[in-house]
Image (tube, rainbow, N blue to C red):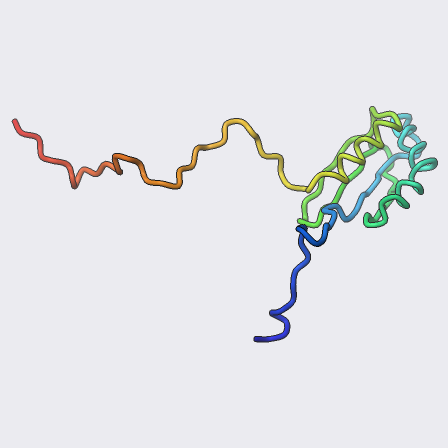
Length: 136
């Protein structure tokens, strides 16, 4: 066996836990009033938030004449975008916790899942080749 084949891949499990989020990107406008609470959060609470979550890279970008958003980028290559324009500072904290706790996977509906069977049907599958010929 080659030595490269003996490497273990990092994964969540018994011995370790890897957070699924890798980057948070804050985008806001410096002039629009809808970005006021986002600017307040960035000036007042961002440093403590970054210190509490050292595993997350945090990027702050200006987006002129646009509504404020936060974009969470995940290990599996997906991203989630949340608008921050109607949120207070405490609401921004809650949305960031939501991004930190989620896995980045698509949301799967819990209702209306298709029924899958592991066994064959009791009567089998009907085929016209195996049916008896009708008698007149």
